[in-house]
Length: 160
Image (cartoon, rainbow, N blue to C red):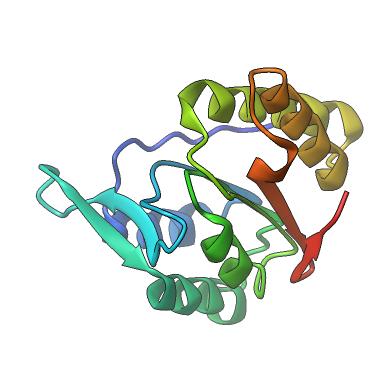
């Protein structure tokens, strides 16, 4: 069973504070990435009237802090955002299972991934690899490519 805590349109400060306060086991980020060379993830700006970016360096600092200082027991981070492979790789230094994407996946494929991922996660008793494969399969049924989704397990890109 999962307890879902949903926060919409957060800025970088809220992203940090909510993660630190809620101490989730799974952090699911649904949002946007810019391109293959993206240098971070896009969040709301502090005025909530546009976007801002949490840079790769800032993501590294944030997840290092959460893991080493706050000691949050994050088991998985799902970056359900376009072109988030680089950010997933950075976060994987601190979190055992991190999922990202290598392309512009679109909403229907992102939603399909989430449906398949959480279905299998609940059914399997938290087998993150099986949940990843289930989510990827569900997204492929909507037209995604196998290579569009990546999993880093214990800091290493998982090949399956």
